[in-house]
Image (tube, rainbow, N blue to C red; front, top):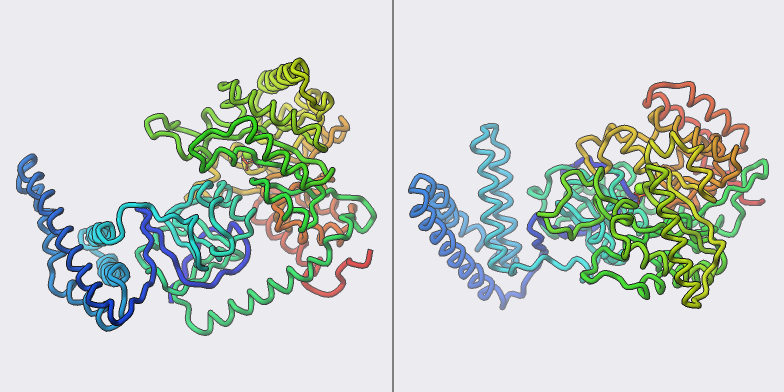
Length: 585
Ligand code: PEP
Ligand code: MG
């Protein structure tokens, strides 16, 4: 058994067989073969050995000719390792005795060797694990071909373990087959994390290097609450986690009873709980969880994972589906927030050297007006189908906001001239997710009908911490007093100006912050659908005076640890798991 810590990004517990997608995208499944297939597997292994050996020999020879024998030595060493009779005998034993497939036998054997090398203190020897890993990759390449495993085409339940998953790959996962996932890289605020939460798949990211230590088919546990990956758990741990799964299930069932209950505080103040979605089909799930509307529709996901750019009709259809599903409830459509970690298909030679500070989001839209216009036309056309609002992301300057509104007006005039119906009064909002927007909010607010605070980016830009980088995850702090001051000020200014304010960053889905945010004066939160019942339960348990006290206490503190401990204690006082559910109102 081995326990590894990472960053918890989507709650819940997953227990199942590992499907390992390594750096190269190979799937390494446990795969037993029938007794009569053993001969064939031995032959496949033999063929792979020969073909890889021929390959390495060829590389060795050409390196020797071009660079000299001393450089070719490394390949000679690979060849020697590959032809080692012990290694060969071990793989054959797994196939023969255990009826493993050639792929699995290769993986189990070579990963065993790689692990053994890794344990050496001597840096030269531990580095050799990479050579073994490279051999494994070559053999698997020969056995299973070059294709990256289509994770979208899974057809049996697994726990997915990978070096990395892009937001679009995550979006393609089928929750019925992917019980949970763990990745070596990734941070708490990255979009992979957000998509996992939206899909309600337990997930842990930023675990660090572990793929060496696991083979496909190993039993593993993803603990999405504590941020832990457990490889090959013993019986005691397994039982403990099975119990946690049952507890969580009963909490989910208990909270389901809140669905049709109003989201109001004990002193009768309504708190509007909206949902964040990435895909149209999530609109229906959000209603099932009790959402009063869509507070953030991340439309850029229309572009991810698709080779062809969506047309105006594609946009219109997607928006129409959401608006119809929401049946009169408000839908905030955010214009494209492409770029940074949400543009995985950019050719590397065009890659932005500093994408989070580069041409992303509204900047990309304003630099590509045909793309922006196309989307705005579709939003305007959808505006007559229900209660549609438009929102611009990552506004940093007033000029950007004014320009974006101007393009919107032009698109509206164009449609009117064409005789296409659209809502001339559609509400226009902006996201407050840059410190510049937060500091100058009194000016911005004069230009919009509503605002929504995007803490995922606000934290990253205020604290200068890449939201997707696990190495600086400790600094990615929603409770940092600098971040809290900005949020508090934005909410106060919005209140004074009578402009509705919401908060749609991940912070709104975390129960420890609910009292604080209500205490700041927020009356609308847009959260991951799966978190709506839990946040509603808190709203129904508290009164505003209590929340204001919490906010006052917190704003008197300067240390993040102190704030976190205080908020955790205040949350614990609500005794959410215990009796006294405010369900009768
Ligand atoms: C945010 O930044 O808080 C936000 C909601 O936008 P995104 O996570 O899509 O960047
Ligand atoms: Mg953002």
